[in-house]
Length: 367
Ligand code: KG4
Image 1 (tube, helix red, strand yellow):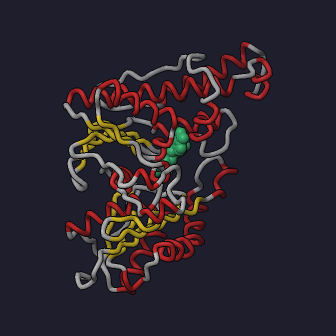
Image 2: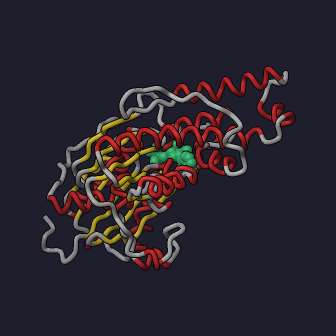
């Protein structure tokens, strides 16, 4: 393999859903992270898998090129190629996987497959270079914050995205155990579907977050699940949200959310604030239960929904209330990105965990 190289330099590719991302990590330090998001899905109110894979094909070369250029790294300096193998949309994953294989073969370097969910958790260990931070490439971060603090093992990670809501016990970069998960919809999906009911653009999570800041979280009471153990459920909340609006429309004898707003001017803000509060309460209650039962005092949040300002505030509050160590990732590493895949691939490289060229992507998996 590439042990003759002076540094461990890995190019990582993420293409599991609708973001094409590439990152370069050298000896554990992130040198670049470039992401092309796909706007094409907005008019459909959700990701269209066929359009996503086509857009990945268009984006992948310029994104990888930009990641290598920004890192100041040539292809010949690469020690390995990391890629997201799954879970995700198969057509999207195939683009990243095939490209990674092609590059690894051409450069005679090893391939490292990364589980997307483990990648989200590994976002907590990403250490961006000072150059990246100074260049404003890490949203909301300044060089004074470097080096970043990383969680000690074991810790509990609340992994919340558009496709997953899980509590994961993290013992090491390679040892993770899902101790609770949603039995139906994910938290991000609940945000996105409720946003769609309100006529908000896709993805709706950030819009709900924005509107919630101006609304009254106590205005509406939505149903909360009653599920045993550490599992979650969000389908009942979605229905409760829908029925609340339906009943309001009936009471005011109107047939659209827009018409309802003429009667309740703060409707959108209030339903968003109430929905966000309910989702956060559901998420934090189970996390607290797990932390208490397992006697683990370090908790982290990861995945796209960890960008939510209310959830981030709830974590800060959790830390104060329970004297716990809490870890909230920088915004740039919350939604899908290759930096987290690069970090996971770096650990696998150190462990000598490479994958054969025959490896195929998978749509669904456990951690
Ligand atoms: O992790 P991610 O980028 O993609 C996967 O699902 O793998 O997560 C996307 C999800 C979407 O459901 C999106 O609405 C949600 O994260 N999201 C948010 C916020 N930003 C993104 N949800 C609530 N508040 C936000 N600020």
